[in-house]
Length: 173
Image (tube, helix red, strand yellow):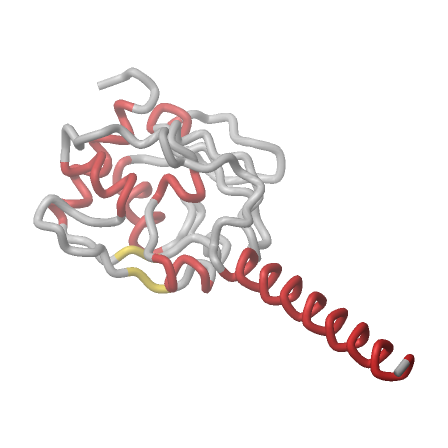
């Protein structure tokens, strides 16, 4: 009878370890085990512009998901948006799960500044260079951005609207 109790204990322990493993995998591949605070609750209720909708949802005002290439695998599985990596305020600064870089500050005025964060050696962005960063994944020096930055395929109008929204993140409009 003692060997039966021993086997039951082994089976129960194996089941508990299995459940713990499933929970860990679900958290990691669920896409929100990132070190940045969640943007839930930070997203405005009712979008006031198409650019704001794109920034927070990855969808345009017609409800179409903005297609992209690259980015972390979990972004493709969950759908993507700018706020997931750059934060509701556009300041970036927190590592992205399964990525190699820390997303940068994408507030419009910051991108246009001469001075950049340590390790960034390139000229300041212009509006055309910001467009290239978003759609082609290149910095102002023409070098590729980290692969965690998706290459977004959006219409010129959606891109115009997104840039207009980025201007509002720092109060300059």
